[in-house]
Image (tube, rainbow, N blue to C red; front, side, top):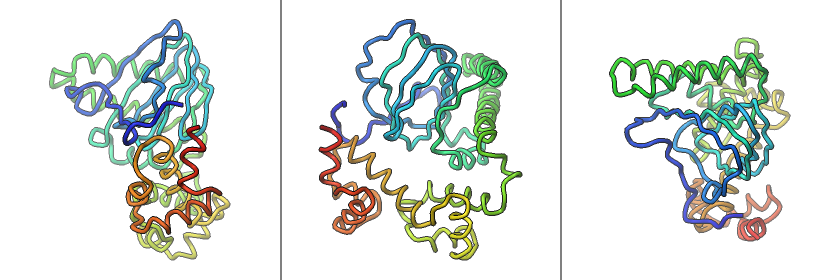
Length: 285
């Protein structure tokens, strides 16, 4: 395990001239020394990877995935990940920030996050790779105003295709029951507000429904009540910071909206089974 260094590193895709959108296609015929690639990090925007050939082993939020081509990976900016190994890889990688994304797509990406890597069939891979090739052509000419406009349009088309892959697995919104739709909306709001809104009533108010009905919908769709999901989202971020950063315990608690560290420590201990202080060295050992 790599040593922690300050806060969790944020990797910036491309450079300043990319203005929030970038794409590339890279190949590695043999396994190079990974070096900094093994450091846990976040990305500064929504990032997408189309594995054309080879294999990759990644750790994403404490889960390890052995990914064989052809596959597709989506990483939300919140997610902490690191590459453990890869071999004979060719991969398309594209990324967009919220400012360049269709507003509806931003909401949909919140709903599908966290998303596990997807194994693709040939038809799915061909559609994505052909669209990615076109996006690359626009990106290479992004300094021309017309092509920059097409770049943003094509980038959103590619993101839309990416989202549709996950919707095929979890169900189209129109096919969802009312309870499932409410649960999706709750998860979307939770991803945005978890550090400031910690009560079921906060989310019921945002969704303009009663607390009992929200709890009924979420429990029916997931098997767990609203309070459980709120706690799990907070604990996930706490684990990320404890595991990958040098922030103090009090700084992490404050980041998550807890002014009183003892309360945060009791909550963490109750859910995880060990205190924040003991969680950090145990998992870094």
